[in-house]
Amino acid sequence: MVFGAMVLLVGLEELTNIHNVERLKKELRASYSLIDSFLGHSELIGDLTQCVDCVIPPEGSLLQETLSGFAETSGTAFVSLMVSGRVVAATESWWRLGTPEAVLLPWLVGSLPPQAARDYPVYLPHGSPTVPHRLLTLTLLPGLELCLLCGPRPPLSQLDPQLLERWWQPLLDPLRACLPLGPRALPAGFPLHADILGLLLLHLELKRCLFTVEPLGDKEPSPEQRRCLLRSFYTLVTSTHFPPEPGSPEEKTEDSAHQPQVPRACYLVSGTEEPGTGSRLMALQMGPRRLFLLLSAQSPIHGLRGLATHTLHALTPLL
Image (tube, rainbow, N blue to C red):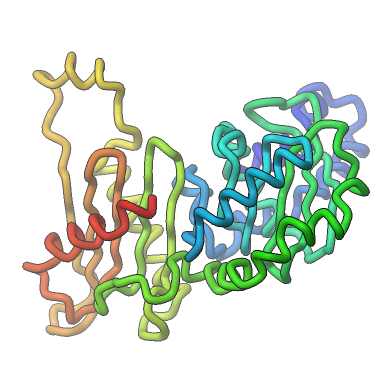
């Protein structure tokens, strides 16, 4: 991720053929805030999962339709709507961006200080590591940004307030409803069990994820501790129980006779042996989806799998 951040903002050519060390040091300063956000306690998890952090807006289809129309008018196929470094909606071309730029671009936007508009040169570490593109960002509401990835056109001046107003003014209420989605990821009123303190849902084929440690308001432990627990549990489960990637159907057919059975679920109980203390962590995989749950100490161990299965079925239509 750190190397990807340097390529994103400086380009591969500058890093592999260094002619002037001092100039390179100066240019690399542009990547410091992005790299710092990886090293700090981020609210995102794409650095670990290599999946794009997303949120689910209440009126997703309406936002998606407007985004596609705006992309056509502005003359670029790569457009997305972001809140706090998470993707709310994006065009098909944006979703087809490769790894790591699909993860890095929202992180970059989330790590930059607020500005009404930006015209930012970026390299795509996978798709275009030596030829820069332009990342245009336009603030629709504080914390909610429209992002366009394009070549020399359109100029930033072409995206004038009148054009933005024509497309986005009618959607002011749905846009406002996106603002609290940053830390929560799910729309208000989404039915989640009261024992769930945090969740991570991955779609391994789409390379997208939902991550929240604030699904139902304030309880112990703190959001920082919850994030730490879920990140550690994800690392443990992915490295020891679940393979990192689902194999191709051909590989699965050929190797089915030789491969050991892959676990479908696992759980971990942390804390003391006293009842009602510590926490429960549950992981479940079905097809391309993996769900990781952090649950309160009151959640009975014999009910973890049923709760996780029910939650995954409820979340499946969203991602």
